[in-house]
Amino acid sequence: MTRILLVDDQALVRGGFETILSSEPGFEVVGQAKDGAEGVRLAAELQPDVICMDVQMPVMDGLEATRAICASDSHAAVLMLTTFDREDFLFEALSAGASGFLLKTAEPEQLIDAVHALARGDALLSPEVTRRVIERFAATRVPVADASGRGAEAGPAGHGAGSATEVDASGALTPLTDRERETLLLLARGRSNAEIAKELFVGEATVKTHVSNVLLKLGIRDRIHAVIWAYEHGVIAPRG
Image (spheres, rainbow, N blue to C red):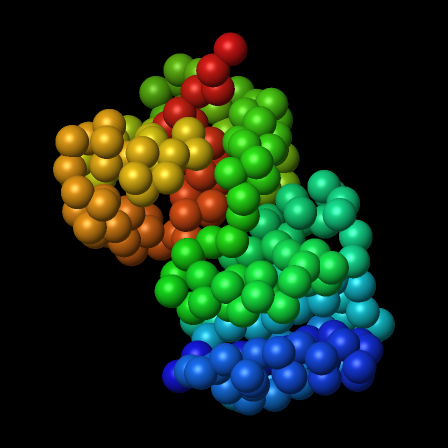
């Protein structure tokens, strides 16, 4: 059973989402919150699997609430929902730790599919959006010195460990096997499981295992944050 928490300041929106999601076998809406602060409290109390989070709310907005939830012991995946197709919301949501981003204008089936995806541990971003993420992080990487004094590259200032600590790409990848490193590099280039399987001459089930191992060993929430991690830690260079 997938446990879902709804966080939105509009009661009618919460009610609509509950009607849609409760109609899906295996889904249970375990709580509703009218603002981010209440959402953080209920996330700790109810331990949902997926949180449908509005961006703009009073008291505490969805971005701040997502940061708090993802920094806590919660295992919940956060799906950001908004009426605004704004790139700054997208990147702020990902930086906060969200695993998916969906417009409120989406069809009911898309909301159901999104919750299923996050419950499986996948991220919900289209290939086009993934490319935007890659381009954004590739464009904003800045050089820093690694432990040997040579130049390395990190992510944008204020975003993750790469901006505040020295980056040693080889050290960061130490926990991974050679095949897992190859998988991470292909993930960071926006490849799907099927494309990775084709390039590595293995089955998709094997790729899924490699992806799971990469996320577990590096402490990364999902595929899209693996892309961000790879660019922040300088393990892949943008293609010119």
